[in-house]
Amino acid sequence: MSQTRVRSAITSLPSYKPGKAASAIEAEHGITGAIKLSSNENPYPPVPEVVQAMHDACLGVNRYCSYLADDLRTGIADFVGTSQNHIAVGCGSVGLLQQLCLTYLEAGRNAVYPWRSFEAYPIQVTLTGADSIRVPLVDFRFDLQATAEAVTSDTAMVLLATPNNPTGTACSVEQLDEFCKRVPSDVLIMIDEAYREFLDPSYGDPVDLLENHKNVVVSRTFSKAYGLAGTRVGYLVADPAVIDEVNKAMIPFAVNSIAQAGALAAIKHRDAYEPHLQVLRSERKRVADALAEAGYVTPDSQANFVYLPTEDRTAELCLEMEKRGVVTRPFAGEGLRVSIGTPEENDRFLAVWAEVNA
Ligand SMILES: *Cc1c(COP(=O)(O)O)cnc(C)c1O
Image (cartoon, rainbow, N blue to C red; front, side, top):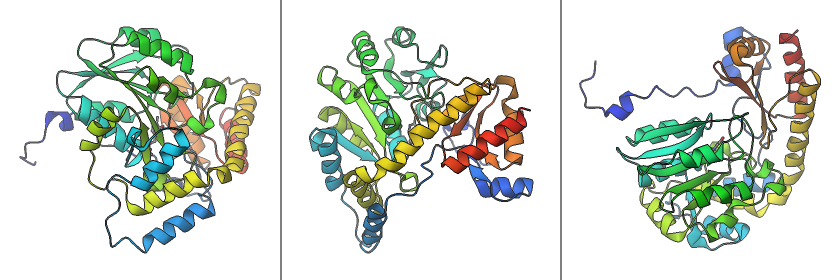
């Protein structure tokens, strides 16, 4: 037993269990050809121009990269329609979430967020010694009124994932604007748009909220739509004063030079991603329609996954599908999150789903 003086915030946390790889499932059940639909990754690799840019960047890795990723921030700012001082990049949007929590939270403060939502939230909040105030979902959607009412004088942050992980439901910019008006202006409101590229454009762009609400920060990532999960790059759009503070909590050179090159090329060649994104969006509808036809209505997903409220049968159904080579993400006693894969992978999921429910 180690005698080292580990902080209570750390000892209170369980060790993180990452989603099982297809190869692990194959070994566990003695099968081959398993597919992973458990981490909301893009099933398609990055476009060739992005791979080439990362390859070229490899030749320069003897040098440190740009500290704050200047070229990448300029590229993102042009894309978003703002200036470079409104952008911060980090080691995945979870890296930026950690920076935000370090910047705004400590013991005696709290963060408010709807629950169930992204699993990284309770972990990053707890690490700082702050408390979590969780507001239950209603019909798999955020109850924004109850969320605003849950804010206390000790609240420093609100965390809103829209589309939400794992339910896939989203909030419109009008709803978010109403919410921001109800929350004190010294409370940071993080709007996590990891799945922005899968969202119907009618929901609007939360970056527009920044004009009237300087306490809003919009978080996005290259991990999902751009197929760069393995490189770990995310970005924030926020008021320059917020960006300056958040950058102080960055691990030096957090976004490595290969990741910077890949993300910049992805922005530049984003049109080349569109055909695959269209496939994923239409596949989401096809999967949801097929499930509904089989009597299983899922919440309206605006992300690259569907959520099955399987409740008590979650663990059993997840295991039975794993035995048949389809890996999904279980939330014990609540539901299963199933990422949208290639059309062939989705067919496989639907067939296995029918089999385990027969
Ligand atoms: C996948 C996901 C992220 C992305 O995390 P990265 O660190 O950028 O890979 C962020 N937020 C939510 C809600 C997610 O589901």
